[in-house]
Length: 190
Image (cartoon, rainbow, N blue to C red; front, side, top):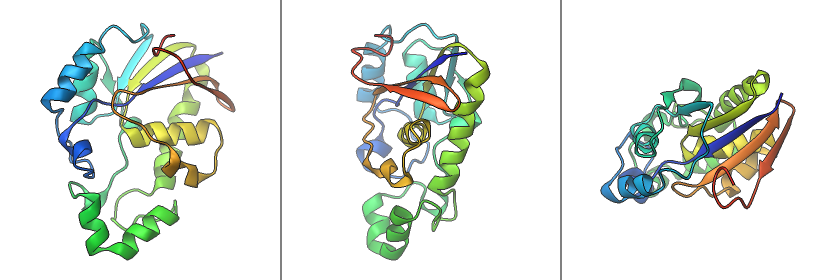
């Protein structure tokens, strides 16, 4: 069976604007307006899901989706770094940030490693193998990165080379063991 998974990153929030490790901040006014203006550009989903974060749930609602929050789609648990800006952490704990960036198994913040994030997201994606049709999920950018790395069986360091701007569509089609990344679609359903 083949499934089409459209991953949509959430609209702008203060955490993104300030390069802050997510603290479950809500969308800001410009993010909410952008999400509302994107309503109607998504394909009709058979299943609509979201990360449990406020900004993902708010983005989904602004898009007109009745999306169920799904725990496997939550962003990486950042432990003691939650709510801090990356530049603050890098200035105070440069060795920890270097270890986190260099080693996918490292979790110097006491939260979840990128390897654990990838395993969780990859397990969710492969669990869709028994389904067919369309899944639309509004998820954190790190979840999009982890899904792409897993789907294409890329080396873990590629995670850091993937940019996921607000309200970006990423379409993965296929089934467990054979995923394709669809590039260049004008809209998520295009």
